[in-house]
Length: 428
Image (cartoon, rainbow, N blue to C red; front, side, top):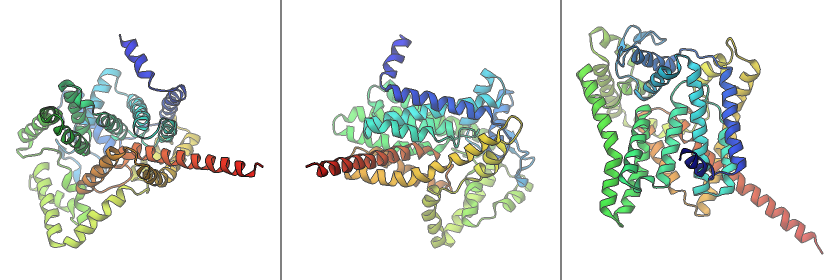
């Protein structure tokens, strides 16, 4: 039975696509074999939280990192729990070695590649799929990063594919499965909520055909998310005596954008004995006050954030960790380091090509509404809750690969057609 399912799944792909998938996976395994993990910033926090979980200490982190005002402070809800829980399970099964996390990134990137191939076949053109897959396969920017990018992008792309195919209308069980995957993605990064408008739109269209099925489906999608969110919120209230439905990172994460000196505020409030939830609430109120006091400046911040999200300026994690340290340590390679640094150049081609591809697809009236809705909801929600950079934009890069591939295919088709016409005109 499992072999039959596997055979049926593989039958969706051509031999070149299967070879591409295998090569992309092997490329990533070779890449991470030269990588050395450095416990810095977010990646250190995730691993310390995972270590705490695997050693029966609960979900907590006694901070001892590079942010001076945090040192010696215990956090209970500063990071979303999804990725630390994933690491805790992974290391519990395979041993406490960051190499397994790197391998999981290679697996996640391969899942994303499969999603890109399926989406291209469904929405654009089967002939575009191999190009789109190749564009994604060359993207190894986040593979050696032990943060959320690879895992979340795989979940996001998988959910997008399931949404495009309206997987959740098959049965209540399928709707619950979609809701469970959405919940897992949400607790890795809450921006997964950007996929809800796609599901909501599908259910709204279904109302015209079968209102009961539409409402039941959407309820089944939401149930796992609501239950998990309620459990997380109750847990946070028990620990922090405050309402924390997401994390306590919102204030510190956004303060700089609005001119709020969050570091001094954190230092002073910490000395007064306030916990992370109380400090976060104070910072959020300061941000709200700054928005009210200077609405024009605040509006400018929100207008600029989508452009920052689309910016190709490398995130600092890339510049100071991945490019300088990850392949420069013991077991590293200067050649691999050089190749990794220059692999980012594909972004400079993919971004403008995706704009042309989107335009061509719109002119030809291809069914790309689901992609555009997801891009719009992701960009809007991300810009409301967070500053933007290329790292935060990682989940929608697979969509850009689709449009970039369509642009390449269209340009090649035009070139071939033009050449054919030119030859025909020369014939007597």
